[in-house]
Length: 286
Image (cartoon, rainbow, N blue to C red; front, side, top):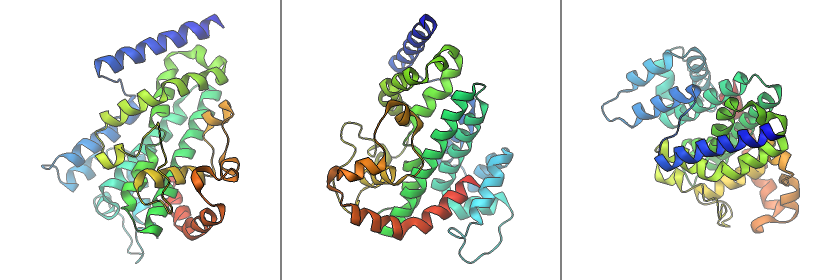
């Protein structure tokens, strides 16, 4: 138990130091995501430049082409076989989301500990689930850009991913997964904010993550923050850290009419958006 306490303190001290100095050491699996983001923000960079970076990563290349050929994004079934054409088809917002999803999936597979690997895999599936619902809701409601909603939904667990990736340097933490979940809950908010700022995401996405008051109460969700919150309620795949902490899941929350959401209206939105959600989920996971 002492090993857990000492390593948890060492991890906390390291995180606190990095936050105070304004520098975060990102895992190498997120490097491509950051490079794509920087290229996408560079007015001097072309789509060909971005496609060249994507081509350098075989898994991302394959998934980019697969997403471009998904019925949802290619309704006329014009077969796309090149990365350049695929990047143009899916757009930069979707590419950023896909790059992060691929990086997170690789992170989940890299953990040597079986317990940590299961947590990472579950967290990845939850993030993709929320992102897919965010896209589907935005597409159905037509109140905001679906690609922006997709990216915002994928970012919802970014702080937890960062903490999970760095935990491999502190192997004693896996000895008590419940206490590790408490550790993650403690640091998730400050780390999540810092990581989002480091990614230099647009203000409308940053505003989505209001940890103190995540839901404004609009129905149907009329802004990105409320939409991502509702997508989190819709997600069928639970957040594994919330499971470890005993946090109530979607059925219990809806049963209590959280934030004034009427279950009948919520279910109607789910039914209307489900097909789009499943198509996007398949496109991201494929």
